[in-house]
Image 1 (tube, helix red, strand yellow):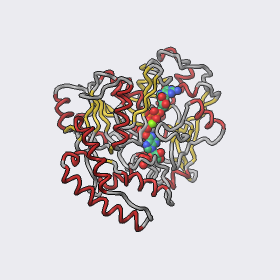
Image 2 (cartoon, protein in one colour):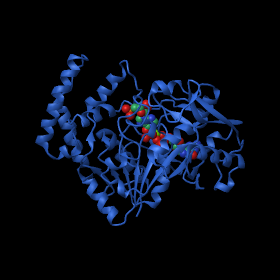
Image 3 (tube, protein in one colour):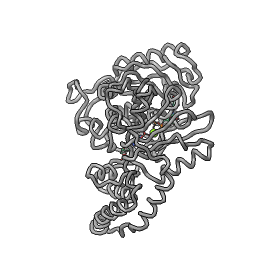
Image 4 (cartoon, helix red, strand yellow):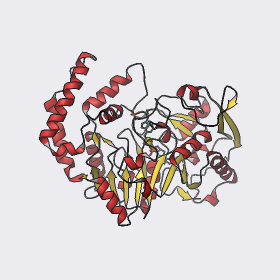
Length: 422
Ligand code: GDP
Ligand code: IMO
Ligand code: MG
């Protein structure tokens, strides 16, 4: 039996989808625990690329059961589109996809409110998927959950109550026409018919499975620095991608977690706004973006790129309790003559002992770099650690030492075969 949490260790898009697909060979169940269709997890099977937003990346292995936990916020259209796309590609989800009855639903007004909020003064650079407004309603105890779909009368009552408030806000403050309550009720009842067969008491299912000795991989979305509590607030998402979120987001108790795998990109990227100490706005940044194909899997936005930040990953390691790390996209650095790694931050000439608590401080820190020699060698067809050039191994040792992580998996390309254990 093994229960493992897999987390993004930076600002998301570290290659979680690819590594979940690799690891899920050894797990019976893969469960998503937070976030929603803001996530875009890419998996390549042969030359075919799949981008998963809500369904766990384990779905591409026939014998794996996939679970969407209570911590996830579900956009009905996105979920149905994803199920359809998988079916079209010959991947059957029936009997092996379960959705928690406690998961909250993204409503059309959540997406609109997300867009409205982003058109104001405080732009976070969200994905526009309605994530923040949906979690606001969840914590305000006004949310609509999957379980509400099972009781038509209650569902109608809850949607009507929500819309009364939302429509008033939309009309009075934002001069919007508001939503037609009957249209929404009809749409969500149709959604219920389509997903009824997947609804499950997920905590009971997962705990029972664990007690039977089945292994579970808990797939995080986003990354530690986007965590609403531990990330670069307010430039974060509205959930807890860090490992602690895996327990609340699924109903698996902390005492069952055996290990935490941190997915760590060999350099740093960020989509959306907020401070980014090692960001490169020069030709090296362009080069990373181009070679790494750093464009958002959900929105297509160009990702901001920069050098590896060991101080940030060491913080992530502390918050997540990472027991082993997978280094991804190492191949992207292959043509750099010199590679920089940030090993600490200085603020007002003083070395910082801990990760800054405010974005104001983080915006002002000076990243202190060490420059390493590049390896000038295409490593994308390396099949083992021993195949890697000496300079590449030195780079790995260096980042591991300064980030306080133990590297176990190395990824040198998007495909399954471009992965090996150290
Ligand atoms: P996620 O959100 O963490 O699952 O990551 P994304 O799927 O958004 O972004 C990672 C991108 O890098 C995807 O296009 C992957 O196919 C790709 N990728 C993953 N691992 C590697 C790797 O080792 N090398 C290269 N070149 N690409 C990779
Ligand atoms: P995966 O799982 C990278 C970012 C957005 C924005 C902030 C808030 O693919 O790694 P939101 O729509 O969540 O309210 O946006 O979080 N963001 C991500 N960045 N990868 C993601 O997911 C992200 N999901 C959200 O760009 O800065
Ligand atoms: Mg992504």
